[in-house]
Length: 435
Image (cartoon, rainbow, N blue to C red; front, side):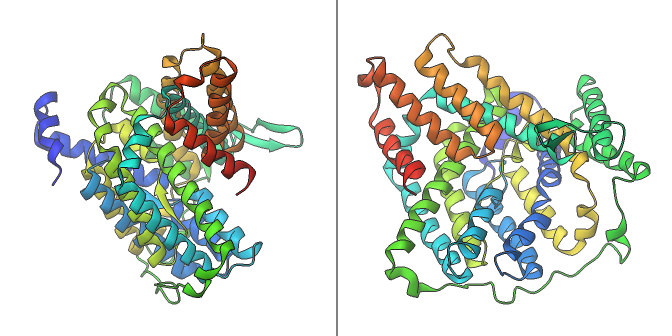
């Protein structure tokens, strides 16, 4: 089932139980880092007119099924769930662009199906092989900065002020808990404790009890809670919209967003593996297939597009390398359907230190960039800057990609541009200036 696990065990000299424990610990860590999706996704899709209680159940089931596809088909430690930027776009389609929820979900189904066909074609591998190395590194480093910033922002260490981002009050509340958690996690890492990230989240959550940050109100009615029914969501399609040109423009937009979000996520997650990444990158094609199938499965449950979560990097940092990590995430989401109050009590401030750690690991890729070559350093700088300031990975990559092609042309090196760069430039140009 997980073919590479035994070979890894032999290479590292670990026993099978130890390797399995590492993978399970990684899965638990990833789950804790991304369980917020069970609260955030129903709230966002609820604004689009979908029943929040049903979306909660659909979100859990969609995450379980899509993550299991990643586990068994790609054998990678990545979790797949409704994307946080993609669900906001879905909400905008319904609230501001005039599409009904059923029409928007139909667009997700069609874009996911096209994404799946492209993932099976030879064009996918050619595209992946010819992506400029500096852009690969820029995306992984930029995503690392974004993840770290999100952790600090969600824990109020960084706050919004009239003049821009500022430092929060570190003497109380979530900010204090996040700072304490950083010290706890730092100490565990210094001691080389294998399960430092997971233990850090648990310990920080417990510290949050006397600080009043870890709230237990959700447990007042008990730990167990039956999942709400999926009324009105399953196979909620409207195929009468297929004859509209505007619909197909929407499908192209979603397709580009899904592909680029997946690409950026994979590049970032592989970078967390460090020197081991080369042993796993041959699975990138299968990862795209799994990601696209996740979009299709999610649409059948009435969800906005699924995507591979960058928070999977917390589990990769712990040592997750195979599908067993992803299976563990799926099992946790299954139990979350029935004991959601227990999981949802983990505060964002307890997860923030883990996100900062993953950001540090991903940022290390920047050391491999040739800053002496302006045609490469300038696009990299734009990607890092845009991702950090906007949190829009796909748009940031589009800006950096176009800048890379333009700089090569201006410096008389147009002959070094591959067909993929030319085609990608056209696609990204359409994305930024038309779609």
